[in-house]
Image 1 (tube, helix red, strand yellow):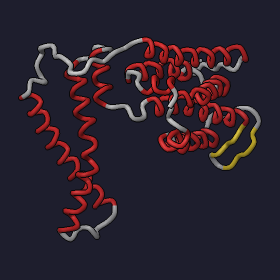
Image 2: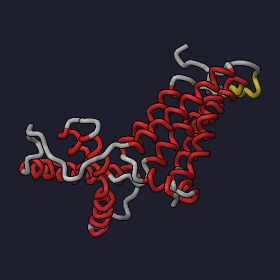
Image 3: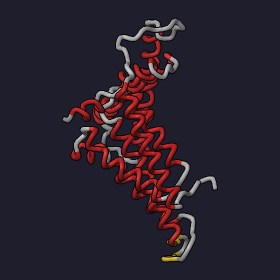
Image 4: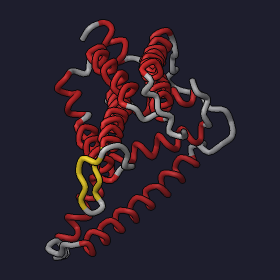
Length: 255
């Protein structure tokens, strides 16, 4: 791992969150292929600097590469019709405008989702909570409660497996279909609520619900590397928006 990649990997999670904000703001108000395409190209050029490696990159972002084309196909077939008609059948109308709209939507989803997924890959929830509480000064009760909830998510898989084995031991494992799935989901919900109640009581007993300002075991630092990462995100967004405005392809969604 290069020195730059090591610095990016050690950046405060709050800076990763703030670096994504300019990209989202720059692309969410327009739907044109130029701004999204430029942003996506710059992001892919900068991706090796994160040190994630292309093999891991494809692994952690594969869901994005699956969902984005599906959404683009939907817009292609059922989007707003404009321009020359290329194909028409029943409620399906493929026009020049819907093709451009589908391409722009595909690029925009990739440009927004890929950096967010890569930047937050491997982020420790505790480090994120430390940053939200110390850097952004969010309410401590909200931050600690959210952290406890994230920690409990890992137990859902074990609970699901335990419920499955218990149903199988009672001779209910062969019952399949929507009804069996709903009953098993309800059992998982009951277990989650019980564990949440016990966790809330335990945290309350340890003083997590008080109004007294808390201390933090680990300081969350925000320095030059964090500012540089946010600056890179803002620069990518600025270049993408400028390219769209200069080429005349900027298309404000509200307009």
